[in-house]
Image (cartoon, rainbow, N blue to C red):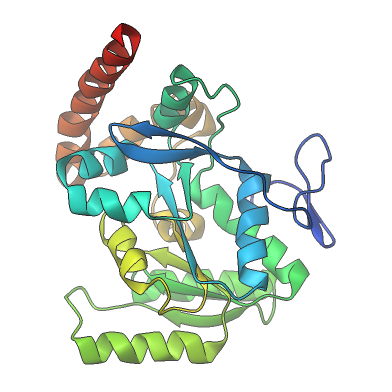
Length: 278
């Protein structure tokens, strides 16, 4: 079963947005950003995100991309150190609709969702067109095997590295060995599926050590392989994906959604009120 469903159209050497404007071979325009509870979120779209990733990767730059949602914002709100990891990213996309709506309320009318599980296949297809190699870091061994096999069937030779790290802290020696293997593999784009906040911390710690563009894509590995069910599109568009995920995994996710979602609404409302009064 293929993992490639919907993504922006990629033609030849150029990524195009819906209006047909070539982006990949053009200098990237400045990002329009806003701070939501002091965490930076960038206004982007799929074509723009793919274009930036491919540009960095083709030049061999060490960069990292965060796909942010309400959970990311509240982790950032509670932990200034984690906030610095997000704010230090080269691109922070709106993975969830609530952040798209928040950006629009903050004056960025063109804000659009860039959802990790849809960004992955878009980048894979573009990377294959450009002759770039990709790798996967994170997930369980079984999930990673499925992901690599599916990707290999669709794009032979595209995957140059895969590793499922143990569920424990790595020693400095182990970590350095992993970095050496990633760099030796020659991958230019590395998808990180460790979940928030672990993946954002990992990418921040490994910038300039890992010679690739790193994309933190959360549960995308599980969704793309069908290991975990994905919310229907209409629920995602309504900003209710969290309700579907909570229904599927209540024991694991109840604290994230039932505690953090109301806190986000309250604190963001306070932010808007402060801005209105200033």
